[in-house]
Length: 426
View 1 (cartoon, one colour):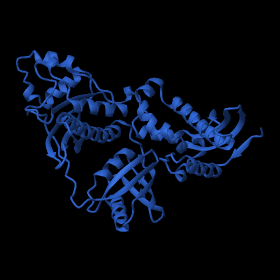
View 2 (view 1 turned 45 degrees about the horizontal axis):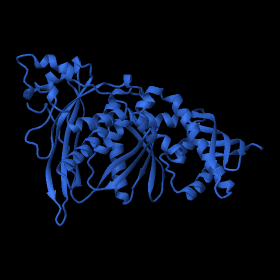
View 3 (view 1 turned 90 degrees about the horizontal axis):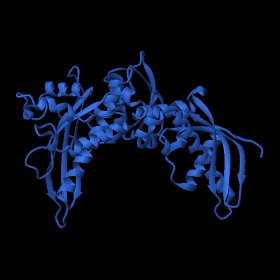
View 4 (view 1 turned 60 degrees about the vertical axis):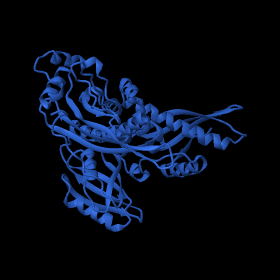
């Protein structure tokens, strides 16, 4: 078969047709931004895709097999970037960040060969894969760094489920009898997906428990730092979690359960606070235990996501000079919201040295932003800014790109996050 080359714009047209046929392809990174990546970020990968031929429709099978070859090509590049052990331990995160949206990282392709039998069509392609964009997505999601490159975490959480008289924690004198708080398990799993390992401190605390002066009810920050060093952890994550409110829903057997999480991360060597998070979450359930735990899990998961951004920003190498970010801002209507955001970005955001408009439609605006620091920190600062009429939600962070949305606020303002200064019990 004669080789056929399809340009990037031809590829774009084909994908839009494929979207119409399949109705299930998601684009996480704008095509315009990808087209502007330098050519040396592209990697040519040979791949073979396969599809069944349904009802004799060879053209449909050809499109599906081509798409399958894209997935194979992107998977090959991911396996080159991420070591096998790191890929295995972060596979769910890698899948969500890259493998579930491979079309976002394909810039063009060439058909090399095609073969079919009575049931299947196979196609061999040479695919241009954006290596740098994959790295950006994995790094922004915390799935690129090996565990050895990120700090080991120790969790010390006081948790009180609905109906419990006293909080639960594991560092009491009878260490083996104290169950791990449910929120610790949820947060540890969420941070592990971002590449942050954690350690169980039970073995390390047994020596402290035997000391006459040890008082588990006055387990202060100094004790936590000492325990973390014994357990070879670099960061202590401590705080309070509770699920106390249960509001019956009239006319049903259901109730609404609310949980709160107030947590912070500190450097185990210096005691410096690195990150903090305060979250509220509610769920509906017909069972007290399930409702309590589901609400705790929801709030703890939100806290883990917020901590991951700050921890990644704190432990990744800071760039030497300013970086240029292409920032796509959606939800710009009403226009006054976008003007307020742009003014705050230009004049009231640490590290931002320059903001230039690049383009605008009635739905979104494109800005070029010069910034001194890690993009993750800029994203964190923007989401924490207090705007009267809207909040900022960041949906994508890369080394040179950021996508965010301006979301109109509800009539009731969101609560101000609180901060813990000491461990529970002090």
